[in-house]
Image (cartoon, rainbow, N blue to C red):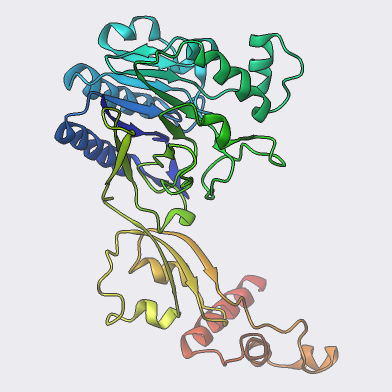
Length: 380
């Protein structure tokens, strides 16, 4: 069996307020084309199809269109599970008749012990679960944490192993030793929410979801991989290469190859001075429609800095300072009585120069003068 492994679509997600519908649709179309080019026997989606448990109508329509295209029009079997961002109940709506089109969607732990039987492979679809669910299922109060819960789960799955076939686990959890990014909901507290990779060694391949980087888990001790999300969801993912795995269970051992996805608008981090960022001779190689996280090396205040930067970089998602501001705690000038007798413009100029370590520009002086004039008129 050759299948495509993807996960963490998070349909409906936004990037710091920016709509990602176009990016997600484009990534989906590339996934579809890869599946067609590779002539895969099925598509695995390892959880977090939606970004939230109660998705917006637009997100529901978008995901429905994607699944309809893959399953009903392209005729790819789909093997999917619910993730921690999905509402298992909502996602399962209609699933009783999905199997008629070879769309297998597991949202309950009990379903994980009924493998999907293929000519040379058994697929165990394990949805996201909490320890309490496993405790109830096995009627075992000693199960308190995920590392304890996975033991009886794997043990029961092994009772269904066909020794003549390969065994693939599809799951959505944090594997111990994995690297995270800012866009994932943390599933670990003091290490108790992690699944030990040693508990996965009985499988020929483990198709994981939850972490958004394909390199989050790179151990050779177990054949497990995260596909990562097909779209970048945070600045901490700026340097990640997004894509999918093509997994072939016909080889010995099972082999997997990464196929990259190219974004419409990439997520990039820029660290530079305000002057360089607006210099038309600088950064000419960039696609200025990309999403940018900008870190300024300047330490002085810059009026309307975000508005000015967005004239060249319209999609700024974060803006920060590398070294903060060079400021002084208090105004080091005249006494209070003397200050009240000073010209307001002189006072402002002195204060600004002490704080910003540079004088007011002519434009700033004009703005201040206009504001003072308006304030004086309103008092009359």
